[in-house]
Amino acid sequence: MYPINEMNHLVQTVMIDIDFWSILNGRAIRLLDNSDVVYSTARTLNISFRQNELGYNEIISDPIACVLQFMDIVRKIMPRLRDVNIEHCTNYDIGNRAFFLAFKKLLCQSFETSDPTYYSPPVTDLETQVYIAPSLTSLKFAWNIYHEQTAQLIHNNAQSLKSLSLMFNHMDSIQTLVQSTSGEPIVFPNLLKLSFSCWHYLESNCKPTTNITGAFPRLQSMYLNMDYPFKDDTLFRGTSNTLEYLSMNVNTDVIEMAQKYKVFGGNKYPNLRAFRIKNINTRLMRPGAPSKAATKFALSVSSKLEILAVEDIAMEATIVPSIVEHGHMSSLQLLAIPDAFLTLSHIVVLLEQTPMLTDLHCHYTGVGTLFECVEDDQLPVVFAQKYAPLSNNFRVLQLGHWGNTDIAVVARCAMLMVIACPRFTYASVSSHLREKMRKCILELMSHDSFI
Image 1 (cartoon, rainbow, N blue to C red):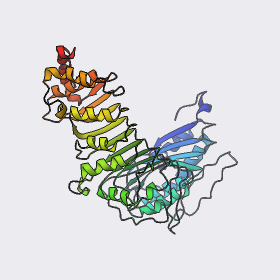
Image 2 (cartoon, one colour; image 1 turned 135 degrees about the horizontal axis):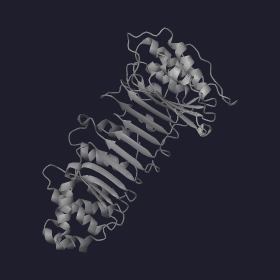
Image 3 (spheres, rainbow, N blue to C red; image 1 turned 90 degrees about the vertical axis):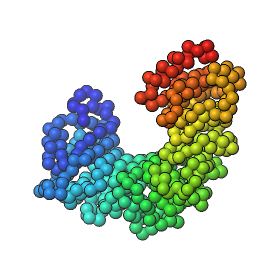
Image 4 (cartoon, rainbow, N blue to C red; image 1 turned 180 degrees about the vertical axis):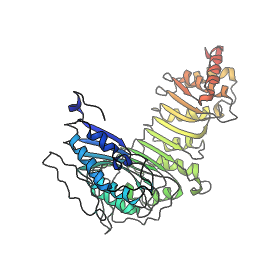
């Protein structure tokens, strides 16, 4: 937080980065209470709690009183506070009971505001109720042994949340994110961003949620940095017209789920512009499935993709003929397939089929079948005569380098792109190869065939 100055009245958002222990031991309270700083127009508080928490053997005589005192100070500093974004560190064990009760009290404590339209719910029994006030717009939290309290906190703020990020320590009762304990559906009418991740591999035992028709009607971005946690299409229901960015792990079960519930296909996601898939758990892909299944799945999502990334999968060069066969990737601007081994022939075919492509990330393995009979010193001339201009939009080629690939071969590919693509400006390789790449390019530039 900044000291007093003449610009404080212009501040709209205040950020507090703090460890909870400093609240309970009084250090944060003394620091803030001795300041006369007031942000009179600030309506948003971003508060992050970090790793340094109470241990199991540390004792605070009255942790609730400390939290209440801290919140009183916050109310004085920000008299018009309205929106609260809370981020809790991803430490799964919250600590001793005193810490947990105090932390819940912080969530429960009402922030008073001068806005007469604001309704502050009463603070109730800490063991049964969790409130956040005035309106929690962003929450980054751990789904751990206290998942019941976490689910209730999320439910109570479902109307105001715009961003929800959860780190899972286990998958118990994950269905309670989208339905109450009595089975009633929970709707998040303003949620724009949803992010799930986990510390280690977790297998979901979640049953299908048949009564959920659409929990996220305005969702724009979904990040699933873990295996899909539901047995059905719960997370996708009602998102087809709003989703713009999707990142998810893929295995055979996910692909079959998407096919069973017809999640994608038929232009169901007309606004989806970016799609990124990974496969961390390759053991969950059946033999022979990874490359072909992932390619087919990726291309089935939307014909209007501008960004497609397929990572951490034993990708084959068959993705190129698959794109050709698919025939509806005219909007694609960035294709990241860092595990695919492509030749110059593949790149030529790819650029012909994707006229808007500006960036390509892949491994490079040589010229391929289209040029295998062409002598090296004739290749620039033949390539220019037959293909230039190949693409008026292509600018960046990020080339992975397999151990047995001659870097001079990679440099030659970059130079050929310069010949055929008028806007090509950047060829990237691993940092330890850049100097060697630079020397190879300078050498090639001295040859008559490249002049």
